[in-house]
Length: 156
Image 1 (cartoon, one colour):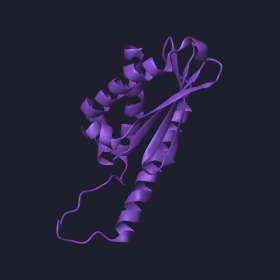
Image 2 (tube, one colour):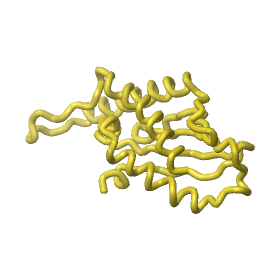
Image 3 (cartoon, helix red, strand yellow):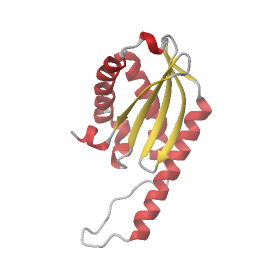
Image 4 (cartoon, helix red, strand yellow):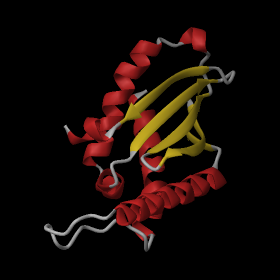
């Protein structure tokens, strides 16, 4: 399971990072530390990030479904907010009754967090404080679990 999770993360982050890094609306740093951040500027940056996430989700969805490994398929991505993006996966070889959900989360979440922390291709996502939500379903389409990776998780 650990290896398949790394492949999932690598593909997902690669697609999103390309979208964020290539965008002319990429978040910029404030040049003057003493200047006041206006509501309009914050709203514009938030809208730009939301637009970038929607573009990334469209790109991912146009390539889906993607077989990540023999047991895992990326079905789609969806924007939950200007600070959250969800990936929808199917574990195609297992049914809900066959899976220890607690063990799945215990083994998968640390690998997801570590990948977010150490992969330089994820810099833009970290800079934008994006929460990534990994949503898993079984081969029958039954919900298994969601694993969020938050800015607090990857800042540790």
